[in-house]
Image (cartoon, rainbow, N blue to C red; front, side, top):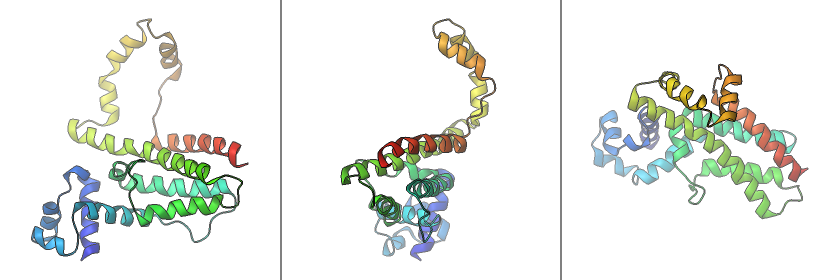
Length: 215
């Protein structure tokens, strides 16, 4: 029953966002009394932790790490990105100051630390690299949930919303107050902001920087 509750909670959060997830909504979906859920789940905080663990486990790390630190880092980053893609609410669940004690996420920490075990880096540097990698993926992933909320609030896709800003953006870029920005827009043409492409581009540049330290 606990697994069913968690799966239903994930379905609701995927469709409506985490703020709209309530124990009553879960109970209604399952045809149960709200209070009966507490025989299986301690509360919403416990539920969210179980949801994260379940969601991240849907994109498991391979049994063996690929050769080389870079391929290993790419593996964990892309699997986390896939989880955020499938479950956008996850990006807003935890912060760097208050990390969620999720066994699923800690598997990724273990993966990174085991990858760096044979390097000359000290423990502080290893942790900083791990945090930077995690926060990079989370930071890009946060835009998925922001877009879902904006679309729900306005009924507009991002393309439709941007189209409505054309006149204002054109006035700013042609005002002469921002010449470099105006030149960029003139040269840019029809730019397509694809988050998957942006993620891969940024991941490559981030790992290029890591290479200077890891060697």
